[in-house]
Every structure is written in C-alpha cells, then in structure tokens.
Amino acid sequence: MADTESRTAPQADSAPAAGITRRRLIGTAGATGVALGAVGAGAGYAVASSDAPERQAALTSLGTDEVMFHGKHQPGITTPMQSCGHLVAFDLAAGAGRKEAAALLRRWSATAERLMAGKASASDDTDVARDAGPSSLTVTFGFGHSFFARTGLEKQRPTALDPLPDFFSDHLDKARSNGDLWVQIGANDSLVAFHALRALQKDTGGAAKVRWQMNGFNRSPGATGHPMTTRNLMGQIDGTNNPKPTDPDFDKRIFVPGSGAGSGTPSGSPAWMADGSYVVVRRIRMLLDDWEKQSRAAQEDVIGRTKSTGAPLTGGDETTEPDLEKTDANGDLVVSINAHARISRPDQNGGAAMLRRPFSFHDGFGPDGTPDAGLLFICWQADPLRGFVPVQRKLDRGDALSRFIRHEASGLFAVPGGAREGGYVGQELLEG
Image (tube, rainbow, N blue to C red; front, side):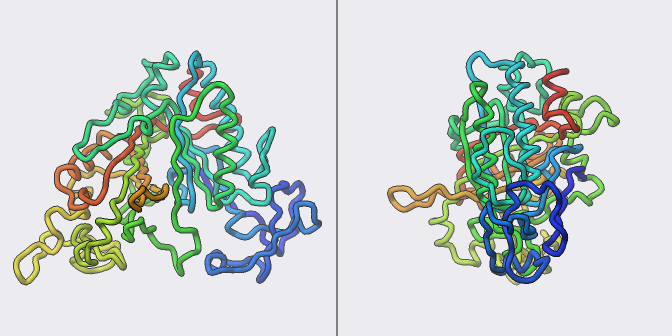
C-alpha cells in the first residue's frame, strides 16, 4: 500500500493554527465539524473576504483533505479518485537535454509539494486557488518512451516502456498520444486543479512545451448517501473488481519491486523504477447516441451487469462473482460469451490485473450534435505486458462494448517511485 497519506486540518471548534496559509480562507455556516455527507447534500457556506478577520476560520472537510507529496510511491495512484483532473503531456524543447530535464523535475516537484500542502506557488502565484485548501490535490509525473533518447538515457529506458502493440479498435490521433513527459493532476476542487495545471505549465520556462492536454471529471465526494463505485457517461458503474491495497498481491501487481526485491522485474524495469508503476492512458470516445438507443436490457447484456447496482446478471450484488456457466430457461448463457464483464475478468486473462483510475470527459458537440465525450482511461500496473496488453488484446477480438466506443489517443509512461524528503521525482534516473 502506498505510503502517501492524507491528513485533515482542525475543524471549526479548534483554535486556528499559527502560520495558517493565506489560501485557507473559507468559513462555513452551520454545524461545527460538518460531515462529508452533509457537504455533498448541499450544506451552505459563507465565504470570507481574504482581508477579513474571519480568514482563519476552518475549511470544510472537503477543502482540508491533504495528500502527502513525499512517500514510497507517488501520489495519485492509490489516492481515492478526485472529482476533477487534468492530464497533460510535454515534449522537451529543442536543445533541452538531461540537465534541463533534471532542473524542470526539481522545479515541478517543489511546486507540487507546496500546492498539495495548500500553499501558494513559490513565485508569481496567480491567486486562482487563494481561498481554497488542498482539496485532495495530487500531482503525478511520468516519463515517455521518447524522453530517454532526448536526454541521452537510452540505456536506462525500461523494456516495459516499449510501444504498445496496435489494436484493431484503435483510431489514434498521434498529436494527442505519447510525449516525453506526462503529468496527472487530480483534486476535489476545479480551481485548485486548474491552479496546479497553470503553475506547472509556467514552471516549464523554455525547457518544454505542451504536446496535448485533456480535462476530466468524476462524481464529487459526498454526492451519494454512501461511498460508491463511480459511474461513467454510459451510466454504468465503472471500477468493479479493481485491485484493492488490502489485497495480498496488490503491490506485486501494481508496483515495481523495491530495492530489497531485486534490481528489476521480468519486464526489464531498471533500479530507478523501484516502487514505481507503469500507466497506460487512453482517450476513449463513447458513441453515446448509439448507446442510448439501446434498451436497458440490451445495455446490460453488453456489459453483463445490471445498470442500477452493477451486480452480475447471474445475481448477487456488485462484488458477487458472476456465474459464467449459468444458463437461462432456453439454455443460453446468462452472461453472454462476448459480454464485457466476462472478457475483462482477470481469471479470463491469465490473472492480468490493473488498477483503473479514470476520469470522464466532455469536450463539446460536433456540428451534427454528436457529443465528444467518453472516458480518460488510466490504468496502473507493474508490467503493462502482463496488465493492460493481454486484456486489451482479448477485448479487441470480441468485446460487445467495442461497437459503442472508439480509442482515439494513447500513451504509456514510466512513473518512478515517490520523491524522498528534499529530493525530486526522477532524481535517481536523472542523477544516477
């Protein structure tokens, strides 16, 4: 389980902490120590002026949630999914190499540490998030295949970072795929997330330029009466059977072994990737007009689960294992042979598993009113050749969901372990 931990600032009945940051300026109306569920249910807020004496009033519980930047693993992998996010890839500028990349990662890490603690940027802060707390902000950094040639570090490039194979369902836009550097930003406040995006983009100076950028969202914490697996834009529960940090083999499946477990993995991950992970990022357009023409029963047959609860069609609840051999009165399989739930199950793919942590997206409508919307699919694994690739190959060959989606962009990135105190992400690679 990741060492990155969350902490919550004192509630309204606590004395204000000395040196409270200038961004923690929002007061709450109503009961002291309001519960997260009440926040989602529409609790009222009184916003204090940044110059008023009330500026030291405690934040709501949503705003006080803070994720640690330093740790064994980078934040944003096992952190609970946030309500909004940005994905952005950068290419190093012409003439920039290892020295410039190291300086950039040092700047980025320092900025991420400050912003995740609810502080302003070290210089030239835009004040976009001035009145907010940390709001579960996470910033995660990764390296693409092309990064290593640009920095003269080809010998340190993991074989696990070899380009993904072509898939039949791919309709990839190369301009919105891959990149030298990748950054994932997540937060439970959209202004906090944008503030981080803008700060990191400004930090690049002349060292790198944006290659592509995508915006995503999820349901806000507290919006439901109890914690639930999120839904995607098809209305389906999305994330059932995700590996859990409490699983005995979770670390083995999701993270590259640390220094005490050998110098690398069978996929060829070098020592600098210890405690890191590999992330596959796919922009998947959902053909919602076609999907929404289907009856609920037809949609459930495609997925193999009920739409309302996420339970398998063979009965039980969301966590019940489906009975893949069960037949109906006509002798037909209840979960059809090409149902998404059947094909994507780990035990149908040699035990392949990945931690899915997606965002939904909506980027407007086409001239004919077709929504440009879908899923920013993000999955984490210790080895993509044993995680994403075998599952996607099988889905590619006969998943009933394939006719309702289109893979439009793709990237694979090596995400090193967390930065140590006083260090920066990727230091072992760039200074090794």
